[in-house]
Image 1 (cartoon, one colour):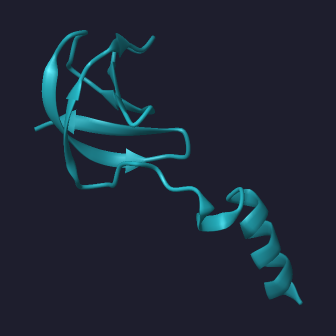
Image 2 (cartoon, rainbow, N blue to C red):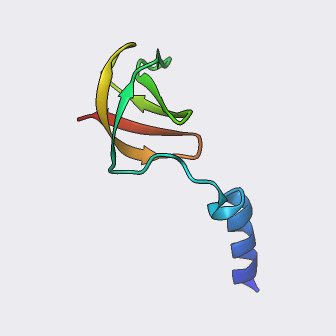
Image 3 (cartoon, rainbow, N blue to C red):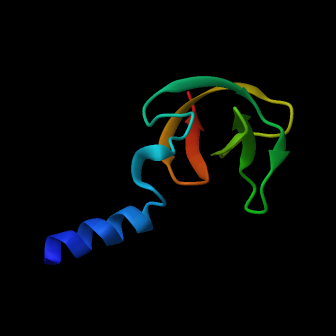
Length: 80
C-alpha cells in the first residue's frame, strides 16, 4: 500500500509524469543567441521558447552552449 501511495504522490509531484519533456537535454550542445540578461547577470537564450541561462554572456552574443542542468521551467548551461 505504501508503494501505491508513493507512485501516486510521485505522479502528481511531477505534474503528470513523463508527459512533458523539455526541448533540451543535459550534455547536448546547442547554438543560441543571448536575448536578454537575468537579474543575476546570466544571459538568457531560448530554445523552442524554453529558457536557458548562460553565464558570462551578453545580449546579442551568438554562442555554442552545453546544457548542464534541466529543470521544469528552465535549463542552465555554459559556453563551449
